[in-house]
Length: 196
Image (cartoon, rainbow, N blue to C red; front, side, top):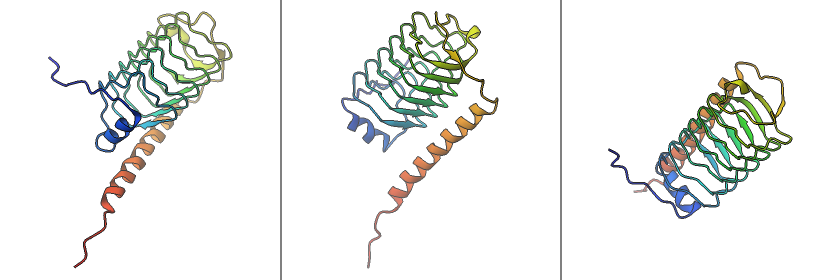
């Protein structure tokens, strides 16, 4: 039984205010919001609802986004790195010109998604569904044989990255999270001291 109440966010500002206090947005409803160019790193977004949201040119790094709902979301030019999108719904999502690197897309549903001109590097697509995906001009270093349904037209193959690249991406994402947390702690510690 789930006793956690789903938090519905009405604006980008509400999300940013919440993030200043807590990095956990698991199960949050952020659907249909304009979050273009937002930077979300090191967050728990498990099961969050972002369907029909605008994440154009957003940066999503080092985040747990498993089971997230990104159906029909706009992710044009987005950068997604070192994240888990295991079991995510990306049905009809627009990922044109997006860069997806070191991402776990196991069991994800990308039916009807637009991946045109995107780059997928070191992405695990085991059990993922790419039915009716648009891949015009896309490039990938992906083991498509592991997918549940491969794209009808496979993206142009790029040289497979070295085995250590996903670890480097995760390390950089962890560093970004550490620096963000340190900056937040520095801001709260720098309150002026009372004088006698």
